[in-house]
Length: 229
Ligand code: DX5
Ligand code: ZN
Image 1 (cartoon, helix red, strand yellow):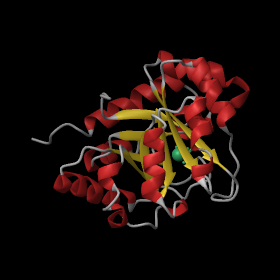
Image 2 (cartoon, helix red, strand yellow):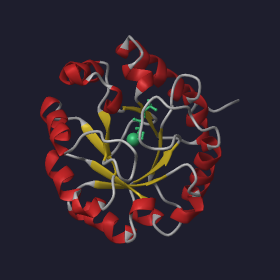
Image 3 (cartoon, protein in one colour):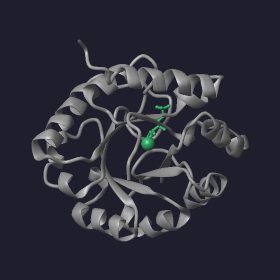
Image 4 (tube, rainbow, N blue to C red):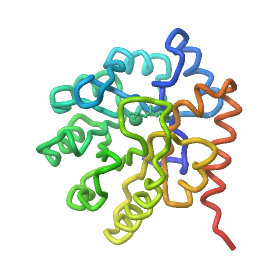
């Protein structure tokens, strides 16, 4: 599947759930096609968000959207099918939650979804070396998972750069996604570091003007890919 990179992936966790359909359409009308869905179980992370029902509601609201489901849950194997059935296009699982990661990634592919592996801020990129050939995407957490609106962790830039080098050296083409605290102060530098997919929750949905925030963030992300003369 080809994507117009770099792209902005609004995280619906930050949306106003009393008018979720309206806010999804506002993003879609502003040109957004990739939506990030944060699933939290209150065990792997200290917060509970929503389940397959909301993913299904997003799917029925936007039949053609690309739904990127980020599982911040224990025992993700138990729920992969529910999210695939709900309409996920991509399912990402945490390295820290999967004792049999290779099999979990295989299971996601067998369900017809693209697969992603996620690592927390304290987990080194190097630990992913042997799974990189099997995934479609690597998601780097730039906040500790569980909540939107947190402060961006500055050491994330180096992790992006390190992962981009690993991808180059291995001749792979997985996408690099960043998640947490992304906004107009860091998105350009994240693109320069090598990010393909920028997850943005609060900087989109809490901006007060969703279309304007999307335009500004996309412009900055793109400017980060321009070769410096
Ligand atoms: C945090 C989630 C992020 C979060 C991003 O655990 O994985 O996707 O919703 O929200 P902001 O962009 O507000 O940090
Ligand atoms: Zn997320």
